[in-house]
Every structure is written in C-alpha cells, then in structure tokens.
Length: 181
Image (cartoon, rainbow, N blue to C red; front, side, top):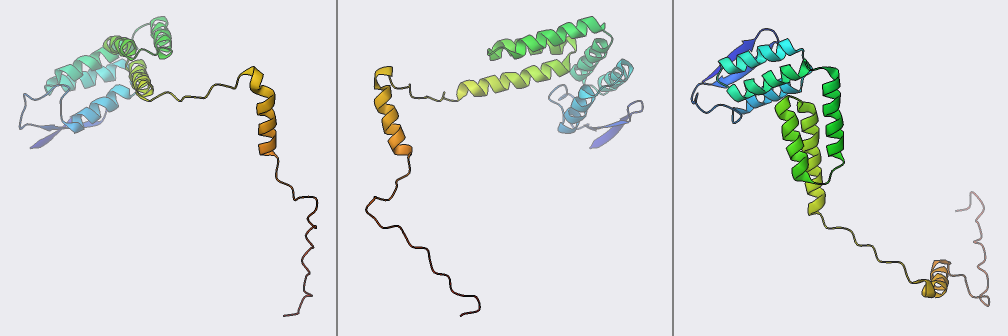
C-alpha cells in the first residue's frame, strides 16, 4: 500500500510503502531515493533542507535525514570554508588514483559538500574506466640514419601516378549538338 506524505514547505510528495517498514534507509524505495536525490541536489535554503530532513526522519528514513541535516549545516558554513572544499575537490580532480578520489569524495559528502563529492565520484569512475582500457601503441619513428631513404620512399608513394610520356593524350569527348537525339 502506498501512502503519500507531503512536505508543505517544499511542496514535495513522497511515496512510501508500509508493507515493510523496517526495510528503510539508503536501501529505500526507488521513488524515495529519487525524491531524496532531487532534494539533495537542489539549491535550497538550509531551513528547507532541515524541513525535509525532519520529514524523512518522521517517516523512518534516518540515514537520509542525517545527510539532509549535514547538507543544511554545510549551507551555513562560511564562504571561505566552502571555497576551501572546492579547492580540495579541484586538487582531487587532477589525481589518477581512484581510491584516493573516492576517499576525498566520501569525506566531502560526510561534511555536506554533496556537489563536490558527486563530481569526484564521477571522476573516479572515469579514471577507473581509463585504466581498464588498453593503451594505444604508436610505432616508434624510424631511426635518423634511415630517414633519407624513408623520405624518398614516402615521397614516391604519395605522388600520383602520371601517364607514361609515350602514351598519347586522351582526346576530349565530342559533344553532340543540342536538340539532336
């Protein structure tokens, strides 16, 4: 049975199942996960995040409520602290160590910087994907001593073949007068 619950401040409708009330947390229903992610990604004032956190906690989604409270606290941090988190995230984006990137992302997410954390997780996935692909091998250039011979061979191969000098030039096609069929 699905029961809608409304958060009046944000105008958000949550769909919850009462069949298994103990199976809650971050392993929630897909609709709840979707709404949670939408709230988390939104640029809301801290009071709205707290209101949403209270609603999630009331409905039994304690982990989601904790993350939303952290997000609200993060919005109240001084700008200098948030800029420092941004600099840390930028440094992590230059790394090629996926584990270290994920560790920084987890730390930033725990502090409430979910936007920076999401960018870092995406970068870690890209780094792992790049490490799984085989490198492209490029043949080495020919040695310097073989360069003149190689250049001549390349020049001969790249010039278009011209007709032999003894062959007569092709005559232009005669055009039929207009109207003749």
